[in-house]
Image 1 (cartoon, rainbow, N blue to C red):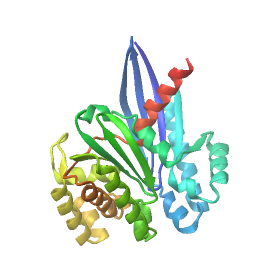
Image 2: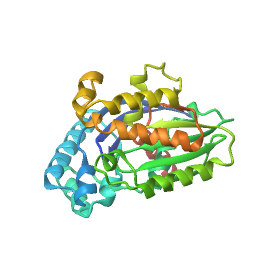
Image 3: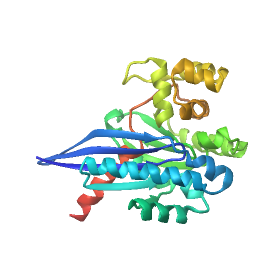
Image 4: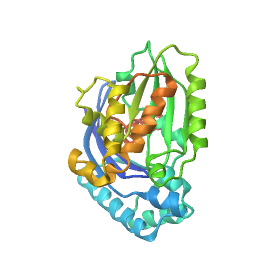
Length: 297
């Protein structure tokens, strides 16, 4: 039996995460085991989407976070790692300077990926374990700067698309109706061929919404329940959400627009429930790294 440590650094628009996983090889079997997950509330999207670039203050916090992540990887004796950045860095005018600074000060190489690669990597997760091969799913991954939608039929990815709509953009009023209309049109068009569609959600917000619903893990969250939670959260002030539901300050503002995106996706696809398996980009990155390493051998 061989055990290797892999690390996936996900540099999102609302936060940064490092996932450290054990990759256990025993004969032809491979087991992916979560070891440690650390989240840093550095919101790059706030700068990128409003100022057009990453501010010097945010860059300082970015450097501090990457230094901390590197120390953590060293403590865990990580063998392989990847650091992927999504829409906040994709759209920042000074992204080249930011990436060079991070590498110079921390030694960590950051790769900026587009929305389609993001969707592809997420589909490398344990999704198959949650998918009924007879059903059609719409997989929705809501981020701070973009949302990825993927149609899965009989266990296979049919089509996917990334839209510039995310929680950080929405709280800063940076999404106009044309984006909502484009999503509606795309979902409705791709839903036409299927009688029944079930949603699957990914991201920190849907995990928190699911937790607030008190539904048993593995069971779906109904459209009605999600609507009630959204209504209750929306009626509260930012401070009240933190106190009543014990939400992190960097979650309390973005959770409401996230719920809205999932509710719209349910409505436009004709879905009535959403499954919330706990995986995201960083989980997919671990498998993606392993697959690519195996190809090279």
